Length: 251
Image (tube, rainbow, N blue to C red; front, side):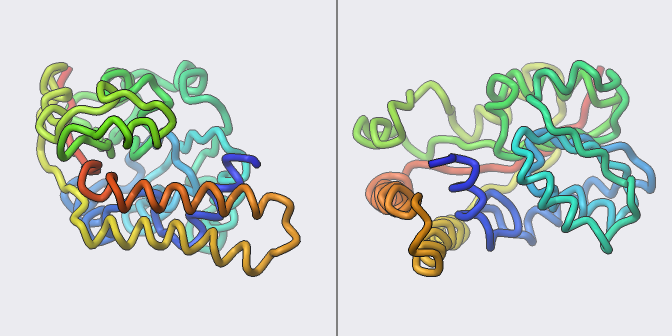
């Protein structure tokens, strides 16, 4: 079973690939208040809904870096008719390779929401965006955190994850401060937002398999999503948080 296929189906009805409400995400955009033709880079942009909305509402110019070509094809379809052609430069590549060809200090806003693994975790992502974003520009990060110490069975259910892979909400803010960024704002996903995200995530797979019973991947997808749902209900709901963090860059 292809992981990208699974994720695409599971997220097919999500506006964004994270548990924060659209209201909170768009509020952060209002705080940033991009100017027309501001240059915005999004690492792990997925279907590029955020970049598309920024281009729609603020007329920014975007650079989307995304490894999964299927997500980029979907993004191009979504962008068509909503924003002028060429407002977003779509790059299908590994983030670590792609940013080598991006201008240092060439962006007004740098974004990475839920994809810090693409640049070696939160610290590596903050360091990379600090170099890409110009002085007094904005850095917007979406990152998980532990609400409480994770149970060993939860870490095992996550595929042998380690507690050190995430820290606390306060430490996520501190990670930016430690490299000279100024924290401006943060939102965290509340319980209703998490439930909306997780139930839509699992329901999308369940419905897809009912609609496509001859797909040879259905059995594997159902096994995976049902195990994931149990993991969320037993441990994740009380343990895993997700925050959106807005920083001002300083050189």
